[in-house]
Image (cartoon, rainbow, N blue to C red; front, top):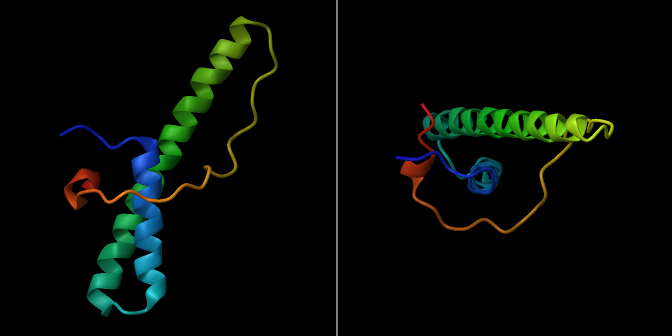
Length: 89
């Protein structure tokens, strides 16, 4: 199965955070969802670092100053996706 896009991962992370913030989960489920959120966050961070590197290489080739590291991804409404899509192990 292919990895999710950055946007799909961000939206899944938002849904996971909303579930955790709801307070309606038992401890075991909360821990599982927290672990899932950390994995998705790490995946998104890696994708942003890769994109920044690629852009900086392109800018360097054109003698344009490099970009600074990204601060936060843009906000967009989360689509409903299969949880298997985000098994990032």
